[in-house]
Image 1: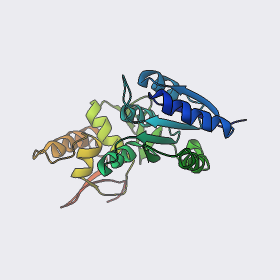
Image 2: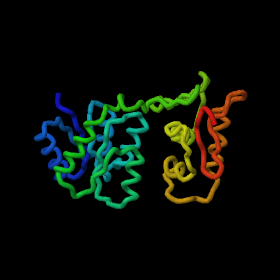
Image 3: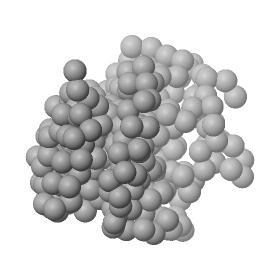
Image 4: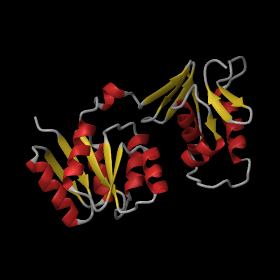
Length: 229
């Protein structure tokens, strides 16, 4: 069976160029130029690769990418962009893109990058990003639920994002800068204690009396979520 590729690109000429080349290479290709429809198709599953334009009407590529990863969908994404700035590429990669290609590009390079991404193990073999856990703390990215020892924990949206960010990096130091960029999408220091306030509230919710703490302060560096300190 042919590998299925979804193209989300609003420039008709670019979309037609890429689709024609991929079809000639033996892939089954579906294409849309609208962000909302692209997100609908991508979340429907069944695709082996998504070629995603950065700038789209209705919903831009970065928002689509963020939504897919938040829903636990690990389909490889090759982003296309006219933005060549390093910080834009870094932003996309941190949001979950697997590769980046700057316009204008050659089809030969796009094809080679697509082949490389398709050679990777499938998302379910690579990792399960639907559920994150540490000790008896469990977070479900799809149902957006959090439990500890069977106890349901109600979190605000930002608290949920922060916990998911920490869980996905458990055992590693997470700096305040990383949290500002990854959770608040700040690329500057707001000179406030917003991180400390949210960490304090999160700790109170996930650590019931008698339970060992899971979020640890790393003095002078940031925080670490770990079963053992």
